[in-house]
Length: 512
Ligand code: F6P
Image 1 (cartoon, rainbow, N blue to C red):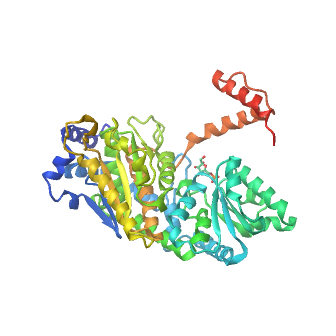
Image 2: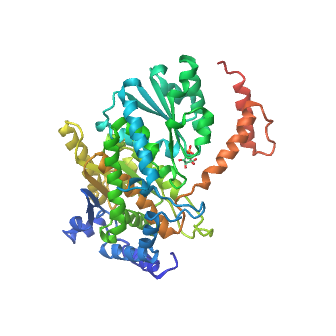
């Protein structure tokens, strides 16, 4: 793409914007804030506070056409093998079709039956064991939909292979009334298995042997391994190889969420996702929220060369949303090789970070306002709260709008360099009516398709993640060296070698 006419036109256009301040763009154009927005199904995207003009949007649209984005979207939504390095579809959108493939419908019905039983009083807690896509989606969504949590039990999430997380996950729970869901597409992930085994030991210590398996359910594309672990097929829910981990919230990976909010609310979330899928498929680029979010992000990344962006939800319920987007975006777009195997000639995925406002304002916003790096921000907020503390909500949202304005416009020069706010710092606002299962579904699909839009222009495959494999292999080798079942490899670098030796020496002194 970087060698096309369309890319060059954007580069030239970007040069022409040198020295243009956001306040010039707003001053000279009173309609800007009403025009550079897009809306669907009550969700508004305001991208007017980015360093761009109508011409930028038109040029970005020509780039999308040059990248054949429309055809790629069709291929994605039609279940074609868009995950080319693994030769399979990335068909998460099938999970949320109103009339989905039979196996999807059947699995949803099985989940709904299981969730109804789980909510009927036998359990006091459900603990989802999983990591990455088998954790972040349901953990994020369960927190996000706290107001819709209507089960008479607790739902917790155990992911880290750190005994401290297990300790915290079971704190105060009665093993006799605890259900574990082992969520793992592969059923081979080290962290998840280590936690599943220790959970099984904990249950076995407290209940009759013939009862242990009734405390476990599984979500996996590898039911044989779940069975070997001792989980009944009746409590094992399918995933398919065409659902990527970080795209799996709408699958049985969302079982813990469904237990928390019930099947109807879960279906509402799927409907919100589906709405966004169809919007993405059909809306012209200038009205297309995922395409715009992706193209503006690409404009900031490739033409302004800003290496990171922040996702700042002004919603405590979305506290885990930045972490969720970190996996979605960085595991998808952190690639330096294109789908055809050639090196990526231009920058790809930016670093994503963030946490909820207003907490971030008292932590890192200093850098956003006055730091030497420009960090484009994506603010997320809602007009109506899910709680009755309306005055709190007004304060919260006043801060969101104030941050966007202050970043964009800064403040006139006071003569004191320490108190000077240059402004001209870009941000985008995603404003919903209220955080509901449906709007959460829209948000998730919005970001999924944002990532797809960018990957399409960059020519990378957003659906594989080979980069995480090397670390797993090395950790396996080092693990054996730490426990003494293998001798330290003298071929290691001197830093790693001496760290391992120090650990081995100190580990011996550990009392259990
Ligand atoms: O290591 C990364 C990863 O492969 C993610 O892509 C995935 O979501 C996670 O591990 C968990 O994998 P699984 O669901 O197979 O346990």
